[in-house]
Length: 395
Image (cartoon, rainbow, N blue to C red; front, side, top):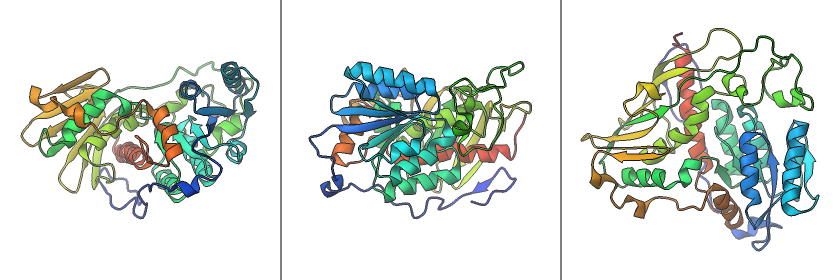
């Protein structure tokens, strides 16, 4: 994509040539018999990595055989959790994701590393024939997104995104109502995300990486730099490693918005907006933002930190006649009682949870509840907005 220092971007065909995911016939199972357990490797063992690890440990037809992290203590903790669960010492620890991906005994991997490593690890896993459970966002940059999606589709890998909301009844019900025509043709979509986001004061921070952390391996494909005094969690406020609140949440509410509007396979034709970006120190991701996306059929989609939208954080689809559906974590509302009545009966995608769905789809070679292209489009929605806003930022 050609980038200009303008707020207005003309976009088109960015993902041209990327095939839709195909259901793979049983002959490609190889040694993975339908009756056997799916063997997993865990890559990235911080917050969501531990959540995912515990979820997979709870499935009887899956087994965790290896854990991988560039932090020695996180590897040791994860191994202890796995060994304690199975009552043995059969879990291996690995510091390099490439070693784990090369293992023929691993069927699938979970990736929950900082954003800047998502693409590199995902591509390596797909090329090694591993199915993938990957946390949001799909990738850190626009350019990486197409590369990862091609690796997943061309290698016929099952991909599940950690977009938890897709497995929850209120979100499925909202999407079913909108896609079912309860508000007529959608004219506008509002996506409210949390605002703010900045790490702790680094004055006086330790200049040495935590003991047991391989800092160069943690940086991976990111620009080389000395340890700045922070990495765990707060990496997300540094644009070289993450995308701030916008990247954290666009893969959730943005994904739901596109799902309901039927835009999971389409980019906007233009993006314009402004954001507030810190001008001092290490942290440089947007703390406030608002941008507008226009689609070829006339649909308008606004992404903003929740304080700028009437309904706040969540997703609202608005029909041409003014009727609407709004959903967020913990609430589901509509412009009238008839809009949502019975919508749950036709809700797309029935799941006992993303982890259960992933293992079932790996076994049966079918598309997951949160597939790769949907995650690709949601991440792009945030990346396009960030690129547009940086051309015309305030603050």
